[in-house]
Amino acid sequence: MTIDPDLLSLFPSTTTISADGSLAVSGVPLSALADEFGTPVQVVDETALRTRAREFADGLARRRPGSSVAFASKSFPCTAVYRVMAEEGLHIDVAGAGELITAVKAGVRPDRLVLHGNAKTDAELALAVETGVGTIVVDNWDDITRLESLSGAQQPVLLRVIPGVDAPTMAAIATGHHGSKFGLPLEEARRAISHMQGSTRFDVRGIHLHIGSQILTVDAFAEAVDAVAELGEFDVYDVGGGLGVRYQRSDDAPSVDEYLDAIADAASSHLPDRAELWIEPGRSLVAQAAVTLYRVTTVKHGDPTFVAVDGGIADNLEASTYVGTDMDATLAARPGGDDRVELVGRQCESGDLFASDLPLAAPRIGDVVAMPMTGAYSYTLLSNYNGALRPPIVFVRDGATRLVVRRETYDELNARDVLQPSAEHV
Ligand SMILES: Cc1ncc(COP(=O)(O)O)c(C=O)c1O
Image 1 (tube, rainbow, N blue to C red):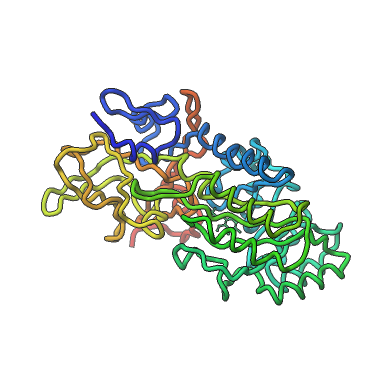
Image 2: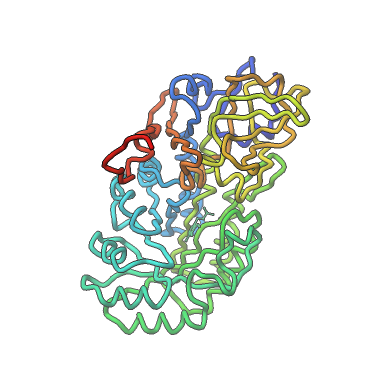
């Protein structure tokens, strides 16, 4: 069987295909993973995850020694992923107490955490200070007031600013434009910086910005660096994350090198020589490392023919919400062939569609379907829609498998419900 190399290029880097067309990740056949762990299951190529983390860290260190990469953990907030990223020497960006606590549970040193949030509470800031979070990104005047009311050692902070850059991405995930809810406009940022510099509570290390996510060209990143340079000279400039990835074979995304060249060149042109450049990739670090496996549960012949699998938007909301429903990056047990089908999920929405007009050879109940590029934001956005159980996560590495998150159970589904004393049927 022949498989379009463009399609295979969306799978994790260790993916191989055997003569009979079956796929293996890191030497483990995907069909064996579906048999052992059931479906849906999210399979993570640990080698791919580590390789990508090194690509960012080494690439940035080469271009700007002394700089830092922080993993934007919102993109895959699972303890095993935190652990891998920390072992690879990355700092960890957390947004809120939940991610902070998860990171610490995973074994991340608190001084390597960067805390974000446009609506941090008293309790979250108190927890961050008590825990010894290395850097707090101040988003607004309320953060400043709250931090001033807490005792403790001087807190290293960055100030999040709005660079006023329209990132070429979907409006819902653009964050650096004028009027954004994140950070302060440049004029106000100046006042906030001078206020914090006048207080013994803060160690103002520098500036933070993040212009949005799934950005497929590099110019806006450079533009944002240029925009904030006028705020003065600081030790640190954290330019956030946002590098986009390919979800479909027709997509084109900048390489890590192209992205790093763009921001490092902009930093050389506009920022002080000694300043550290920090970045916070999420999606581009984890998206390609994971494949989600489903099984076909129903084949409804007609015009069109619907092939339904045992998952859907409950485990892959990112696909239908932001990256488009036309996921031609889907590979079934028997790809190719003359049948054109609508590959759909099992949740009760017509938008629960994985791929339209997908060529599949004689799809049958029980076929395994492998969906690549599911590492970013799918675990984050999991839901129990229609009573779906949240799927397990399995790491694969050098032919070995490791269950890192088990499947949710039906008992857990309503474990938080406060049941009526009499549970008789009514
Ligand atoms: C402050 C901050 N940094 C980094 C990221 C990661 O962005 P991405 O996953 O697009 O790299 C986000 C995502 O929303 C963010 O809000």
